[in-house]
Image 1 (cartoon, helix red, strand yellow):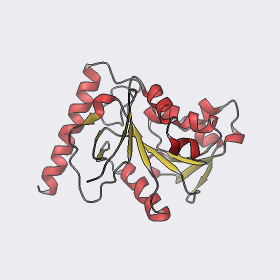
Image 2: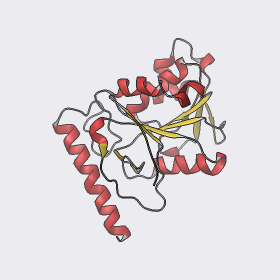
Image 3: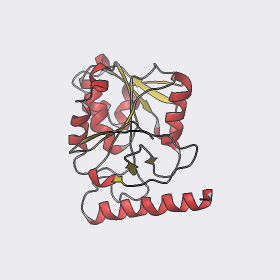
Image 4: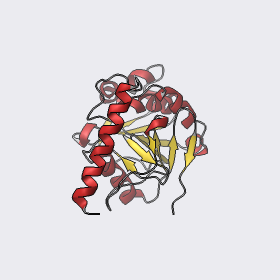
Length: 206
């Protein structure tokens, strides 16, 4: 399939997910969910399921995307005493590193973008993460991930993998965002673990 056709297929899938999430009342603030990594009903439950992973329990440093549905993931990381690394939105201001001891009892606020900028050290360098958690518009059981189209999620993963090598990557999504097939291009980054409000899927790469 030509690259232009793949891009068109990706956009059709994005719009299908956004439309269905909106129509079924799955999407939640910020609304509308078009053009975003959509926040969803059950994002907090997915964040709690993520805590069950051995990779989470053993991690000292966790890298989490700045997207709305991952806010609770960021809060949990700080509450669990982990160093939180966050990309600034669109990577405009590098990376944000938040140490849990700096934000005790203020983890919920520090996990927001505004709070992160208040408490974090802004840097281009950050410690090696033991786990990465990213947002997705859609994902399939082979680990192919679809972002909102800006390429920032792929860029974040590319930076981490080029600097540190293999680091497990998880995504938290609603169950309906797990689809049979996500079209992919050579530069697209895959995920290893999919966590929803109801299940944990470990990807088996072909």
